[in-house]
Length: 273
Image 1: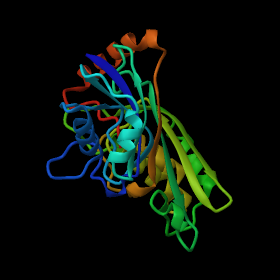
Image 2 (image 1 turned 90 degrees about the vertical axis):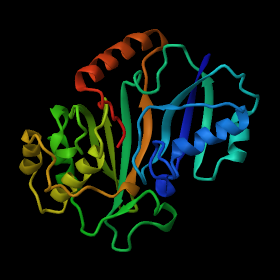
Image 3 (image 1 turned 45 degrees about the horizontal axis):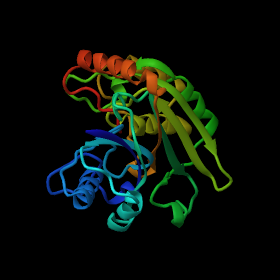
Image 4 (image 1 turned 90 degrees about the horizontal axis):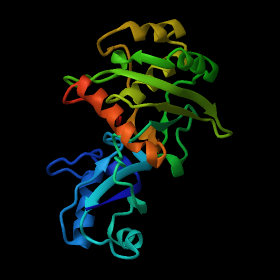
């Protein structure tokens, strides 16, 4: 068996998320079906981060194992077969120890929102969330800074039985471009289910003037999901990159991540949003 790394991009608007679901159109389902058609054998993808319905990706990573020799020009053949809203941008043979999920050091997301009175630019409407109220970026940045570090983000996560909500939020930085679009860069070792959109929703409430920075910081003391947080729309969220260690460090990274997941419980490890 040979392991291959897949780099993947997709517009999540018309997908019911990444994960396979019976009778639903999912990114994983579409990709696996296309590989089966070309390779004439069953394949199963392992992904770095399982994205939710409506969430996009420009830097998703997955791997597959197969004993079938991959044909030349496979990326081009997949481009002809796949629908327009998903693409495999690269396929490379990976080290045996590479695991798209367990080898990952951190995931990077971006969230785009606009408070322009006319809404999102039509050419970016599928990946930019319109915001009904004006937001103050300085206030949002102050609230974001208060959340950085290793914390229990239970207030920001949909609970999964047996899964930890302790995460290390490494970056949460905002910028506004000339068109008034506000973009958050959000990085962590892993994310709980719905965590990124909850983080955005909470700090945006501060940006609107409805909440204080102290309120956001206080959410870190809660041990249940907070009903006071309005979850931001899925359309603004994009997985842009996954970081991995050097090849000789992959096996050690896998052990560290697997040990943590075993402590977390059998359902732990949902690293997508």
